[in-house]
Length: 149
Image (cartoon, rainbow, N blue to C red; front, top):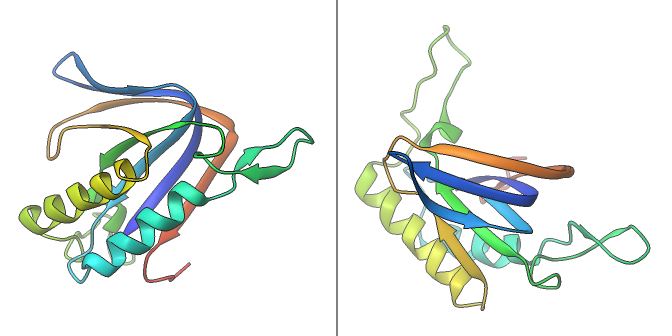
C-alpha cells in the first residue's frame, strides 16, 4: 500500500461537479493498493499516518500529529501510485490491485482511521475526480507499507 500524504490548510474532491469530500486543516491522502497487499498493510498505514508528527508545535517544529491538532483526513483512492515507468513511455499498472480487492482494503483503511476518532472524508472509488489541494508548507510525505522507501 502506498500513500502520498500532504499537510493541507484545506482540500476537497469533486465528482461530476458535486463535492464528495471536503476538509479544513488536516491531511490529504492519495492511497494506492498493490495486488499483494492485505489487512496487515492496512493496519500499518492506518496506524502510522494519523500519528505522523508533521504539524508544527508552538516552537515551529514538526512535532504534532493530525490527531494532536484535531485535523481531518481526505482520502482518495489512486491506483496510479503503482504506475511503473521504468520501460517505455506509458506507465504499466500491473502491480495495482484489482478494483474489488483495492476497494475492500481502501474501505478498511478509511474505517480504521474513523475508528480512531478522526473525521474522514472521501472521494468516489473508480470515479473521475477533481482534487483541490491547498498544501500547507508545502509538506508532502511518501509512504509505502512494504517500506521500499
